Image (tube, rainbow, N blue to C red):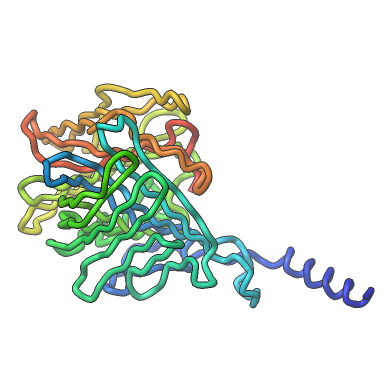
Amino acid sequence: MKRLLLIFLTLFALAAHAAPPAFSPVLPGRALAFPADFGAHPAFRTEWWYVTGWLRTAEGKPLGFQVTFFRSRLENDDANPSAFAAKQVVIGHAALSDPAVGHLLHDERNAREGFGLAWAREGDTDIKLDDWRMLRAADGSYQVTVRARELSFELRLEPTQPPLLEGEAGFSQKGPSPRNASYYYSQPQLKVSGTAAHTGAKAASVTGSAWLDHEWSSEALQPDASGWDWLGANLDDGSALMAFQIRSRQGGTLWAHATVRDSAGKMRQYAPDQVRFSPRSHWQSPRTGGVYPVSTDLALGESRWQVRPLQPDQELDSRRSTGAVYWEGAVSIARDGKPAGHGYLELTGYVAPLKL
């Protein structure tokens, strides 16, 4: 018995002092390759597949929806052969925005990868978290399934345009230093069909449009970053608009970038000094006290955009999974006061500085 105890303590000590894994860096010049880059990149610290969009019921009622799958590589020894050793964690967030409810309906869950319960597979998009699933088919469409306590949906997302490579051919800088970057592509103007339901409303057939972001990185944010404001919008003329700013803990903007691609595929990118978010109204959460700029104007060079929320209360509290509280909301987009499209606005770091 003493000998077995000694062996156990020795193995435990070795495991405790094992060197953490080295996360792969994000480097400029790497060409994204599909379909492989539709799949997971487990050597990097953090990764997400982020779907947001607008739906309409047969009666014309508008709904906003979000489905996000995160993959996080843990700082555990990769050489540990145990099937119980947690090396990757899969996290899911899902939300439905219905103005008739008055607040965001959402759910979250997380599990370590393995045992057939959770995975984020390489080679193509295939993510599972219990009975939540996102799977890319051979024809390029995505099947998204979410079943939760307050909401559920079964949606098909059909690409109508090629992937949009953000930044420099998919290398998206998030600060003055190139080390703070992610690999990042978007799939805007996804055609959506399926069913959606939530507490108090029966399952209804829905159609609409969605935006998919896929990013992976190991060191995206600077230490003094507090969070970001991000906008992804499908415009009515077939164009796609993405803009973000990284905010400093001391106030002000550390970095910003924007991309507009028209329906013919012509792209225009905006440098940090050409991107400006100007809040127009705020909403304070009665639950967390967070104050969010839910209505904002966006200046991109000489163009002016107005971003207005479907409803003010679209706060998502994910402290049981990612540890963050953020505002993720369906918004309408106008250009120079004229309706131009719909999208999603994400506001992080307004309750506490964001930690990836």
